[in-house]
Amino acid sequence: MKKHWKKILAAFVALFLIVGGYLIYIFQIKEYDIADSEVTEITKETYKIDLPDGTTIELDEDGNIVESEVNNNIPVVSTDNGSSGTNSSNGTTNDDSSSGTKTSTTGNAGNSSKGGSSTGNTPDSGVTVASIKQKYEPVMSSLQSQANSRIDALVGRAYSEYQGKKANGESINYAYFYNKYTSAASELEGRTDKVFYSAISVIEKELVANGYGKSHAQSLINDYEAEKEARRSALLDKAMNR
Picture 1: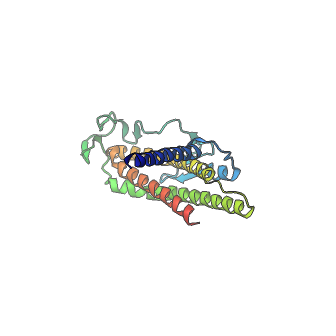
Picture 2: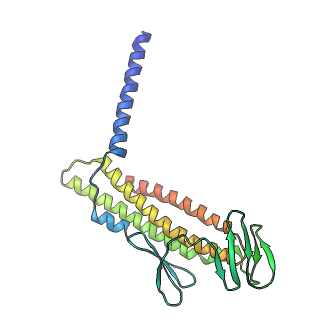
């Protein structure tokens, strides 16, 4: 009797491994023809956010960050994340990310410490971390709105394709849908990340220019990552409830 149950258990384990391996193959390994001009149009749509100083950050269809200058509006393709060093009206500031300290090389007199994260030359303007973050709230809201709009468009396209196949009597290949739309969602997420972290680099520069450490921007990053998880969940919920 014991040998009999061992054989049954071994059979179930073998079946589980076979089914599991097959599911991994069809969902993760097998390649599908997922080319779709409508999906590409959604994922490649340009992002554009307006900064408080009148400049803009734009992500073109090729994934390049383009920043406009405040005076002449000349677009400049960014080659890095813009997080190294800051020039302010009071002098040149070098930020040492490894030590969390800031040393002013030129500028007006007076060293002060704000938030315990940096020391150096600070203008007596009453600018606080909270006021800096508040100034960029519309920027973050705009980015979130644009990201959500693209997710909604992607879900709508997936639903439209699904309904079209059903209406035509075609078989529904769920692995195909999974691969196609998770890939598109990942591309959207990556493009949104580029715009967000470009905006964060601008905020970090302003923090440093006012004598604060870059670490004060971490709460904005944490909020963004939480919103990103919420968008992923919303995408699944919308897809399931269609």
